[in-house]
Length: 188
Image (cartoon, rainbow, N blue to C red; front, side, top):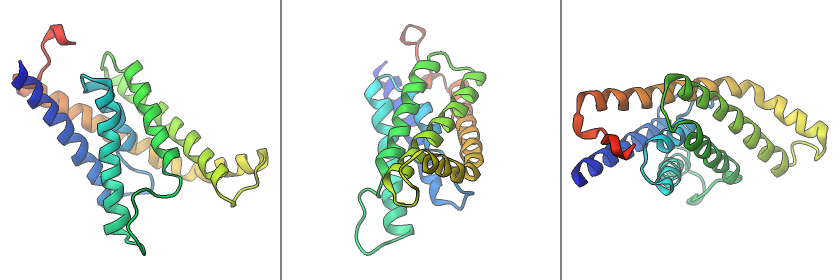
């Protein structure tokens, strides 16, 4: 039983980190796996703290590489300005996943991916509005900020759907091919 859990855990962690590192490949704007890994972690980790911390760690690790290797600046960047708004949206996406993905179905993965895109859009654009001088701090400024974010929303939706379906599909395929990865019925 312990070996089964360890192998399953290792595969889930590896999938999350590999997919998070796919951000290093050229991609359309906002076409990223970050909310998909939050949903995937919420659905598959046995402990809630793992569902939150491991996807966030994978995201942060990929951020470190992007901010310091791919786009190096004048100093080492541990966290970029306003990161907490985006990371907050990943936390809310994990909460969403813990609620709706207790039973994993295609419709729940797709629905969760779409809701997660809306969460990210609402939270991250609110963070841009409140944290930068680009927009006046009133309702007109808030609406202008959300309007400016609309062109990026499509990439978010498509990225969530693509990576969500890929992660859940690959893991389902692995479970169907390798019995040792499946959770025993009493553990579900």
